[in-house]
Amino acid sequence: MKAQNFHDILHKRKDEVLESWVKQQIPIVGKRGVTPDELRRQCAEFLDLLESVMARGASFELDDPKSAPIVEFLKAVSRERVLKGFTPTETATFVFSLKSVVLPLLQPLAKSEESFTSEVMPFSILLDQLGLLTFDSYLDTREEVITRQNLDMAELSTPVVKIWDGILALPLIGTLDSKRTMTVMEKLLQKIVETTASVAILDITGVPTVDTLVANHIMKTVAATRLLGAEVIITGVSPAIAQTIVHLGVDLSGIQTRATMAEGLKLALRMTKQQLTDEQRRDGVQPLEKGAQTANAQKGRS
Amino acid sequence: MEKIPIIKVGDTLLVSIQSDLQDQVATTMQSDLLRKIEQTAARGVIIDISVVDIVDSFLGRVLADTASMARLMNAVVVVVGIQPSVAITLIELGLELKQIPTALNVESGLHLLREKIEQQQNGAGSNGFGPEEERARNGHG
Image (cartoon, rainbow over all chains, first blue to last red):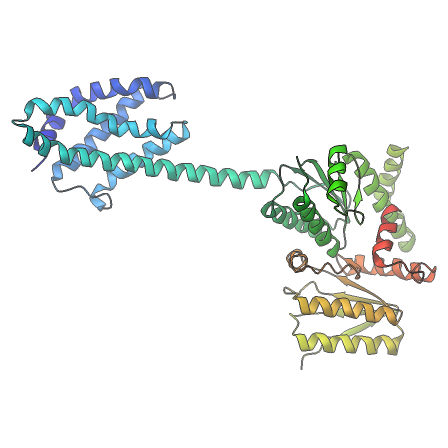
């Protein structure tokens, strides 16, 4: 067995190794909110797992099912460290710092320089493999976090709210790209079908810049909404945005635009009120609730 | 061959498309509808495509053409029940169907139709206002 000395050290002087290993890591992990006790527990578990790997004696393979416990353990540690805000280096230090603890212990046991090398090589390779594994799982976890955040952001940034009978509001925050426009469009159209709304207010106060592409996306949303028989009012057109739109030569003349959401709501109420009165005249009934709402709306306007 | 039923309700014709349309069926529907408008002197037509999952460029054009043809015969065509996914596809294809009035369902379609016909009777429809201007005027209230 090649790494016999290393295995012996792990077996007989585990406490000593553990002690100096933990001591070495405390300055790094301390500032990330890992307590010394927790660190000690992790280190001890890792040493136990490492010892059982060494005890098997065979060469170590990451995808060997027998290596699963130590691989799983390292993945869990990396994941935990990602979530605590560790840098990749700090995460990988967990494994690599073991080298500087064990190597000085191995040296006195070696009979010659050559035997030292042959002793150290397998150990070193094993730790490198495990260290790289922490890198990989660090990245995987990071990737997961980013994907989830993207999803969350897409969800959060496109709320469609019903603000009045037959009126939907859609406050857009952030840059509009094709993908987001798609999400916005789908959600808006879905909501129109659900609520049978006839007016949608698209508020672009939170859209930092409007270029030709964004304008094009807005036009598409408006056109799709019209296909469902609803009208779109665009609000939150600030002076800067109005200037940009005209300078760019974007034609929004077919679309109702207003400077503020409040103005847009007034217009929307007027648009739906027209429908309400028509409906009342046709049906020959006075829907109490709707009539009252219209009256309120009128009061609000004057 | 499959035929699309055209139902007369008062002075309105109701075309309810109950399956995805083959090109041939669509063109047959078009000529059937025009013949029916001629026979009944209907003033309004509602085409309900709420169960149609696929509207390609051909069907989009057939619908737009039918609306223009019907307008020549003094009938207003309203297309109702366009599904969100269908609407998105149409926009992506560049078919905005601006010349066709649309509504969410048959009920609001009937309301819209009545408005349009009233406008026409008041002379608004014959003085060169396209659907676009009419819509804008509606919006301004």
